[in-house]
Length: 230
Picture: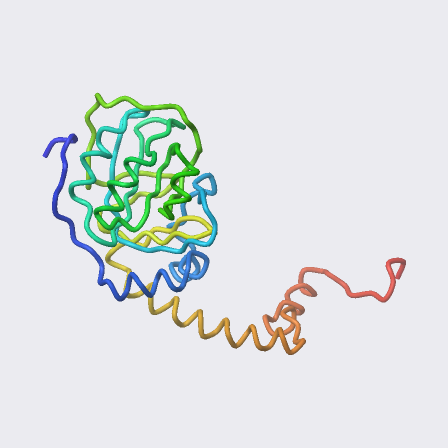
């Protein structure tokens, strides 16, 4: 198949697993996935307090041209997350209020853009969750071909169509579709372990002791002294 294609049908992860990953959140899922799959810190939420997960519908656009995003709206299904990459670095406002209205009408769960978005006040008022590299009013063209639902590289991570996107105030995380069950189990185990740790810390136990860090620090030559001059 050629590069400039729109793939209508993709495989998606189990909805219950997607919901569990959303509940766990980016930080926990990142640890559970072996600290892999986190988009770089330049892709940030434009709002606070949103936590989502969904199957990735991927879009590759020419920088400064959002025509393929319009093409992608047709194949978005309920609960999907639209993920947009550009073929060269860009801060153009690739998505604004009107495209967001169209995506929300298709029950799209949210948007990740490795470029800019515009009409931010309207997007926030709509409650449509967005993570982007920039906020910029610069408009786009609708002239260049691209692709929908093919592999893309975004913010240091390769994303396949149907991979699970987890996004919240901490950033954006990608879980390959084939490992979602494994990562879900590891995330749930971390949540249980963290609750135990939380109780111990609240009970005034020291992490430096129950994590075994005191011995490690001493092995590295760190000394505890009563005064700085000792």
